Structures are given as C-alpha cells and as structure tokens.
Length: 504
Image (cartoon, rainbow, N blue to C red; front, top):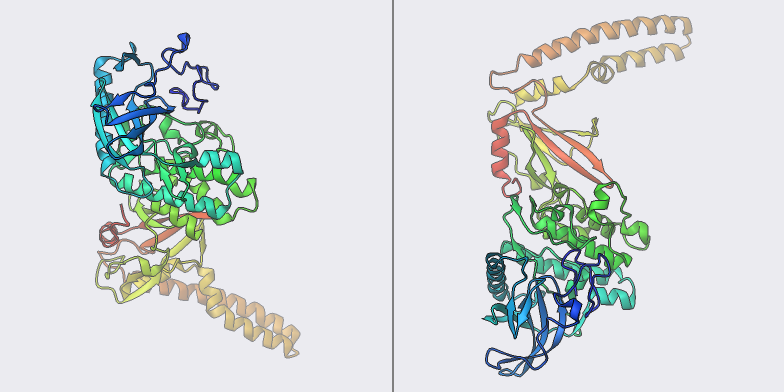
C-alpha cells in the first residue's frame, strides 16, 4: 500500500510507512483491517470480494468475481485515508468534513464516468461503476502480469528497446487522457503493468485531475518522490501535459538505470542528476537526451506534448516549433508536433517584404547568431524582401573591413605581390605602402557612397536599415534553443497566422 503523505510503497498490511512513519490504517492500533472481508457481496451479489490487492491514500482495490459474467474483475472502492467502517458502510475520518468527503466522492464518481469512456489498449478498462455502502466503486478488468517495478526488481534494468517500447505504449495512453483534459499525476513503474500476453497497461487513476492548458490551478499535493515534477509539490501552480511527461521521463530513467531520478526538490536545490548515458554508457545518447529533456525542472523547457517526447525518443532529435516569447517582437523555438523538421520548407513566410511590407521580389537568409556570434548557419530560412530593402539590408550588415577585403583591397594586394616577386623589392615595398593607403582611402569613400545609396532606398514604411528578421541560438547541452526577432510587428503577426498551430 502507498503512504498518503509521502506516497512511498509499503508492504501490504504494514501499520506504518517505512519512510516517514505515518500510520497506514485508521485502525492500526488495534490491528484490524479496513478492507472488506472475503466473500462480501456487492450489488446484490453481482460481485463477490475475493481478496484485497492493495490500498492507497484514496481507496482500496480488491480482486473480485463477476458472478453474472463469470469473470475475475478488479474493484476499486473509494476509501479516503483515515476512514473507518460501521459494518460495511464507510464513515469519513474526523479530520475530513462531510462536505469535503462528499466532494471527493463525487469527483471519484465523475472520473469513473470519464475513464469508462476510454477504449484504449493501454488504459485499464472500466466496465462499470456504482454507489453502495456510502461510497463509490469502480469495476475494472483484472490484469494478469507484473508491474514495471516488479520487472526491474526481478530482472534488473530493461533493455533499451524494451524500455522504449513500454514507454511508447504508456505515452499513447497519456495522449488519450490529455486530449480529454485529464492529468494522471502519478505515472511511475508501480502503476504500469505488463500482462502475461505482453500488453502494457496504465492503471491507478486515483490522483487523476482535470486541467486547462497553460492555466494555474489549485490541486491537492500528492507526490511520489523522484517521479513528481517540482510544480506538483505546490498546491497552486501551472499544470499541464508536461507534468505527466516529467513522470513518464522519470519512469523511463528508472527502467534504464534501475533507480529513480533525484527528486525534483533536491535538483532545484542544486543536486545534479546524471543522465542515463552517464550511469550506463551502453544507453544510446539519443534516448538519454530525450529522457533528460522530459526531466527538465522548468516546465517551459520540457516537451509540451507527449508526442514531442515520443518523437525525440524515436529520432534522437528534439522537434522544434514556434511559440510566442515574452519579449515583444520575438518568437521562441520550442517543442512541437513530429514531422515538422527544423528547416526552411516547414515555415511559411508571408510573401511580402519583411521590412517595408510591400510586395517581395527577392530574399535574404535570416541573420543567425549563436551565443551572440554571427554564424553562417541560416537554418534554411530565406526571408522575403523587396529589391530596394535588400540593398539597404545588405549594406547595413556589411562592415567596412568586410567591404574592404572583399573588394578593392584584394586586387591591390595582388598587384603588390606581383611587384615584389617581379624582382623590384624596394619598388615593391613602396608600391605596397602606396597601394594600402590608396585602398583604405578609396574603399572608405566607396563604402560611404554605397551606404548612402542604400539608405536612399529606405522608405517611410521601412522598419529599419538593418535586417528585419534575426535568429539567436543558445546551446543547452546537445540541444539549441532558438529565438526569432522581428522588427516589423505587422509582418510578425501575419507570420504567426500562417504558421498556426505551430505558433501558440
């Protein structure tokens, strides 16, 4: 059973948590059990209790028999921590008000209704639910097999391919949950079973809650150290799919290394988490990188959808997309749907000049900076410009020395070397000095003339003489985060519209 305070698993029948010492049953002092006894009938004998399978902070799960269909089923009874029985009827704990108990009971029933809608091979099937004994019961399929936790304990770490396959199945189940507006909030090896026929199934939805994407919401704090992200330790924080993704990454970490990752609170305090590849070098870097991406402490640095994470596991590449940045006039590169590779042909650029907004008849590569230094890596992006704006943009981004050595200076240096190697050494030196002075003066004049001619192309509608779109890249390990900066706010708005839903 699981401790309702720290959520650490304890042996069935334990009176106190082996981790924090919390009493695990309301009647621990007299040794009695809270579970329904074997042979207890429910729904006028339709279901008969066989034995208790486990108990957690929200309820008790039983192996039962469906006498009508003659099959084994698992029945979960809503039984909040601290409750007791009067016969078979549940009496809430004194610390839990009648209103709070009724609210939690209603929530359990609502979640049962939602889960009963799912017909997904990787989500435990809910056959029915009913109210009895002052509480609610959920009837689910009984699964024969071992949990991922039990497999690791008995067989050791799982082979990489086996672990990836299992996490992909769980990820598929999570996508279905998230699309229905639900968070599981307790993904861990103990809550995933591999049946005798190889089916991977996610179960135990006792902590499941509804969520609204990108909204701060008050939730009860129920955590499993090592698997829960930092935001789950608070009662009011921003929750989303990324909350379950952290736990899914932690589960993958455990399967690959044989141990759960350092808990999020310790990591936030500066404790380092070794990557799976560092723990076991035989683990591929692509899988290790994907796991560490899911385990980012900050929510905005994690995959934002399960599909992002699964795509990274499969390809070794962090998929990229565009989302609005906090700074005005910029877009940050973050995770997105797979298939949208980071290349020019996956972004739709408005066919108008990015500077003045007029018709475009030319294009320039985006100016790309990596950690503050201009590089030649344009990421395949060609920004549309008109021919007039191309001239002033190219002039603005060309420095004097670049102009000098790409133009006049080159031919003067050639003449100099011809003079030197022609045998007129003294004349060559004199000629070289004269040519250098002439090159600087004449090139300076030509540079200023070209700059003025380019600036003459500036229109009242131009946003600036410099490039209208730039990209900054900052490396985070083997990954790079990118930000696009736009000087023309109207062009940025049109760009966002064209690239929806990649732009959020």
